[in-house]
Length: 129
Image 1 (cartoon, helix red, strand yellow):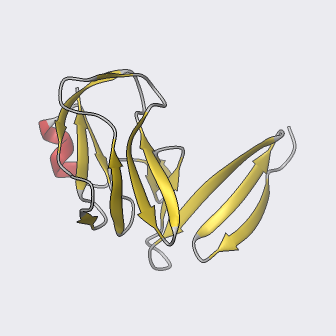
Image 2 (cartoon, rainbow, N blue to C red):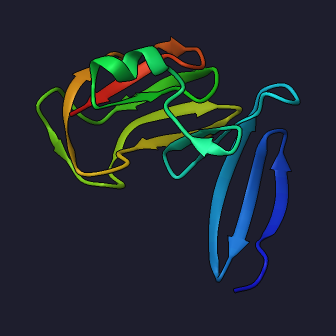
């Protein structure tokens, strides 16, 4: 395996190429408190985690906004069965669309956003069970 190649596209937006695959990674936050969004997952520091730990206690998994954004599309409703990788919500931040994807097969327990909402980091968007 070779080292990934990283190209900065814009402030907080990077294109990563590894083994012939290209993916976008979004980085936000001040030095020492960075957040990254990749493939529908949010990373804080060096481990993946939902940004809102309190919401996680009330649901198996809460998907949160990784950065300030506008909700462009809500693609699911409560009760919907989703598969790992399915886009559930599409956000727009820094003139780029960011799909929030299901991390695993699950059922949508609750939807906490609507199209047009302005959401802040750590805002719970979707709860999965």
